[in-house]
Length: 311
Image 1: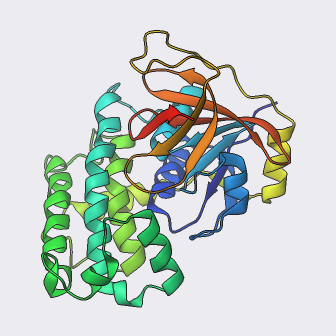
Image 2: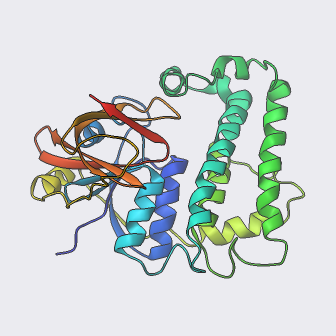
């Protein structure tokens, strides 16, 4: 029996949009467990052990954290249609770190433009998650993003111009005639600002290749989606066994299999996960833990952007 793809997410999440777009490119069926935009997120945290960010993918009793790792797992298990049609996979994955910087600019722009309209619970939640971004100061027009985010808007356009330049030869997508993960990574900042503000035209004025490219990307859809109650997802995990994981004895982090560890993201306060390290490699690390009412699950994290320490 095929293991169902279960995605914990909410519709407005730009990071979850990345995974949904990958599912669309691959034409995959998947099951949707909706999570709240702000804490508490009991169904999600029960499965992850403390990580509160989305998207999170569940395959049986294996839990995958971070959109990049999720897309890598989708590519490994369902290689066609591929997210890397010209065979180049490293650079599109690396683009995620560029667009994460662009995402910060987007958040600053939105806070400057409409931060005074953010609901109090949302503002408090995001302040806790991104303590280095002062939403109130941005909304009040503090420098260097005064004049309602003019500086952030200028930075946004500088990033967007790079995408526009890549399309200068008339190609349909960033790496050629077929969509790839490069398009997903470059598209999600536009999704973030466009969906929240409802209008991108003023930001991409003069960048004439962006809108047609983005329309082609959106037209790819998000796969075959079906809603799933959280309790059904938990039952699926309870009836499954986590997959075997590998352990690299030469890993720079000198830690033995079975050691108690804590893992957390380096870029934001998305919560931490405690358990036993059961997998460690160049690209990912895996932690086994007990999920309440479910049993053993293994939570998988990317190495880049996450750190572990003995717990």
